[in-house]
Picture (cartoon, rainbow, N blue to C red):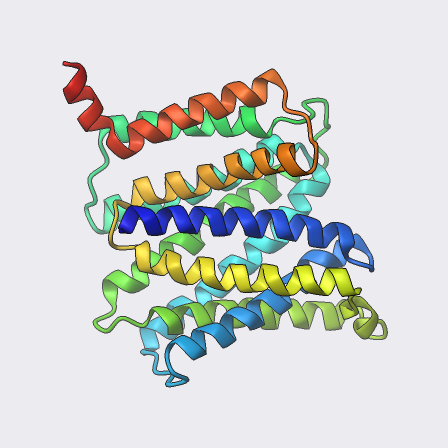
Length: 299
């Protein structure tokens, strides 16, 4: 059942990636504002869904409040720096840093703070996955790195890693499960901060920035509901499966399926390098999930 839920998480986050890409293309305003607008609306949607799931009986401990607020800023950091990184350097390097942070930071936190087991096989699989990420996402190696790119991708890695780590830490250290409250606080902080930045930058044009076409509104609404579903199922899976396996599988599989969706539905071409990356990533994930069983069978 746990692995089935993990598969659902991957499918939902893949759908989110695909839908947000379509939304960005359909957004009627300045493309630069598509991401913060999405953060405002999707964050508010997640908060409402979270409150519904806890029966609108919101009770959070001081520790959950603290971790949720910090995680909200981590999510905001991720949303902000992924835009900056995409504007200043190659997508392939951006994705390596993002997924490396999303895998390595939670894995290290689990190993150091909670003594999770980190075997040599898992380390090798993670390294293979990161190489595969580069191969899969390498669309144009000629893209020049502009000023601020390395700082942006470094902060991107920290934001992505901190987000996953804090979700896990909250469940491990609080005496009472407050998953919905944690998610609500996290996304409320991110949504409010994104809204405040839009209001500050676009004082006179705020309503214009938020205005949607019929198509973009549908995509924005569906994508926001998908985000809400994905994050809540993810919090169910956390704690029931090895953290290194969970974040390696979910981060890398979402990227691979997103690339395949772009190939199938958006007619984007896959290079030989992209195909090799998909093959090596599949192999690494198979060994990550059941490496010990495979090695025993081969002996």
